[in-house]
Amino acid sequence: MLDGFFDVDNILAKLDSKGDFLQRLNETVDWEEFRPLLHEVRNKIRKNNSGRRPFDEVMMFKILVLQSLFNLSDETTERMILDRLTFRRYLGLTLSSRVPDATTIWLFRDALGQLGLVKKLFDMFDLQLAGKGFEARRGSIIDATMVEVPRQKISKDEKQEIEEKGEVEDWSEETSRQKDTDAKWTKKNDTPYFGYKNHVNVDVEHKFIRKYAVTDASVHDSRLLDVLLDYSNSNSEVYADSAYRSRKNLDMLEILGFRERIHRKAHRNRPLSEREKQGNATKSKTRARVEHVFGVQLKLAGSLLMRCIGILRAEAVIGLRNIAYNMSRLVTLCRLRPSTV
Image 1 (cartoon, rainbow, N blue to C red):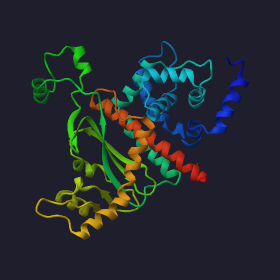
Image 2: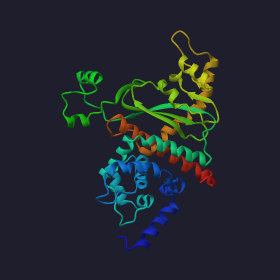
Image 3: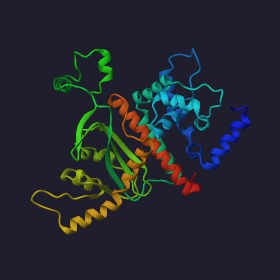
Image 4: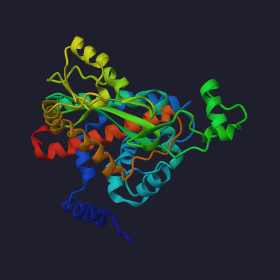
């Protein structure tokens, strides 16, 4: 049992000596820059000035980043904030502070999604990265990863009705809320997936996510190439796997002034030449850097499975994961370049 503030300080000091990631995150990210944008959420949630004072909007955003870093449910997030001193310190809470419950956390994230603010927060943090000397450099790597959701039990007839009408008329309101009609099936390397895709543009030098887009899993990777192009990168080279190689994409890149570094693919009657194989191998050395991004996201979260329903909420959750990854990456790079903090 803790007897007083000195006990808390001693425990935190001991934790710091072993390295507290969340404390480094607090020291690295300028959280106050997000406040004006986040204030829109408070205005949406708070209809009038009666009742309890709302939780600080920056603290609520920090909670969502915390969730994304450790893949926590709303209920687990509430419990862990109550339980962990490091979580409380990261959020600026004392032992006697009121802690947001799971419903409050859900409502805040949902409001962010409905207002379309997650992408704006992502772009705002990208400006912060540039201000710390981490501009996009040495070209772009474009790729996509699956983000699965719990698989739905929907009959063939119901699927057809959804495609035609956007809903199943026989479903009750409660059933409709529990069915994700936006998520789709696809196959990759003969493995079936159900859910969404996180399409990203990662800069070669720093491995930050610079652009992203969220679609259902059935959308082909190549369709998002134009959306993901980063005109701010210091190098015009665009790396991608053979799925992005089409005459349309190659012509578009040339017209827009980008240099394609897209893998060549073999065809039934035209295998790759030795020179083309060597070219692919050379490109792979750079393109493989994007796998580090997806690998870190998987390591941080423990699983890329996402428990939310609908494309709007998927966009919010995936966008927050991308922000959390970039923040985590910034902490890592600032440890190597402490003068940038």
